[in-house]
Length: 160
Length: 372
Image 1: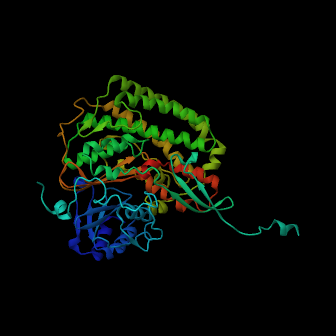
Image 2: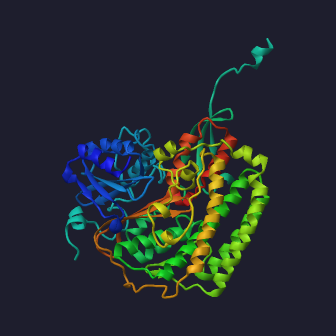
Image 3: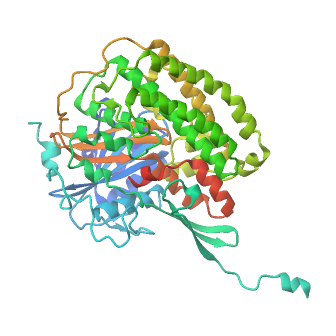
């Protein structure tokens, strides 16, 4: 299975306008998919089907909501796929830990650091912070940060 | 009558905390084990004791200021983390690194990879009861630390790679010491194999223990020697070539069964491949500047970037979101040990407590890297 197979499988799940080719030489990914929260499981299943592994899950905090980034990669050359899920604050997301076991810990980390709740997760506990912590440190309203911006400021507006 | 007395009266399981201060956990890792006699029923690695919030720190520091943090995640292969972070930012900004600097980086990074593998080798064998090889390894490793100390000024937590090049040029003393070290380590292979690889006690402790096959590695996102031990020739240095690795001639050692012995063999062979890379890099070392002209404060354009390198433990990635200022908006380090450690929840159940030591040693984790 290859990237082309994954691309074909994904085109049946998400709209063609939500699939963006990206330049590996420029930013390290070959494909970006913007998925709705309810399509995420189908996307992960397609990735698993195409023999990709889950590289990491990253949370991002913006003034207009949170984002969860999934990186999938294959044990072959240059096939990193980025899946971007936009959430409004306090929106929950379905777990993909039944598809990828790696997601159990990665989702715990995102829950721990961002407070994003994953539905049906088998074991959603804090992982890096003490279990009695009452804050989510990577949210931008915690501690010292340089800036708190909206997604438009970073992805849509041209460079100053 | 006698038979009846030998029957177990009740079946019961109990819990055992292995760590956080257990000598074989190599750092503050706690394994919460549910045991049935000597057999493990459930394993729950508990991490986070060394969480320092590197990713949060990045959000209030300049790109340059974050550089020392990178080598403090994995203190055993700090230069590889250094290289990964610096190369990620260079790619974002579009800095061309002079060839001499890239060669120096590769030489030092491979030396660091060998020192990391040597430390793993020594401590793994010591966990299994062999004390002598540990002393041999530390003797060899000390050599590398001296060489890197000479050029970078530090022994473990390097900040030697800088944006656009390296901090200091290497001299003839460095080159001759490195060449001598290559000779010396090559003369040691026989000792290592006679002491450990052919040792029947070691083989019994490692063979068919902790099998991680391709399927399991894919589900848990394991990379590095664990994945290669399972027979998958996946190495970022070949799959996503960076720096001057495409010009180097080296092989990716792989195993077959994916047990602890395969992972052991893969790492030993990797050290020899690293020696080959260093030799080639020293032979072809070009003249020229060691640092490109870089602005005082780097200011990457808006967007998000992912850059991966092969650390001593597997695929290391830096995912950086830039808002166009000289501070990262978000910096995520995808550390290899995180996935490599999680696989224990699947591998440990059904094995003996004594094998836990062997399995944990063979996956080679660095806990501060997992915790970040």
